[in-house]
Length: 119
Image (cartoon, rainbow, N blue to C red; front, side):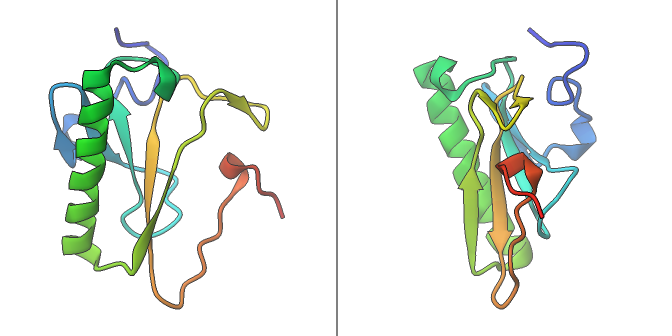
């Protein structure tokens, strides 16, 4: 069930990079590197540990699709993959989202406050 104030429930179909029966891939609006995207379940669920087996498998399939697409588009050297589960660093994540962040040779990836890092 979609939540009215959730940016991941209220996405624009035009932005969808990949989609299956249980999830989709969207570009990350606050990108940390070129091609940074998020994999999200279609169902509004906060925790990776609350998704069903079918949802989990579909999210992993979408993660692989995202990696393949990013390799084709940007040829990164590698990827940083991660997500925050639960209330961490005074930020409560309301809709599960898995970040896939392309890493580029000779470019430092600067994580931000979403990852508990501050200057």
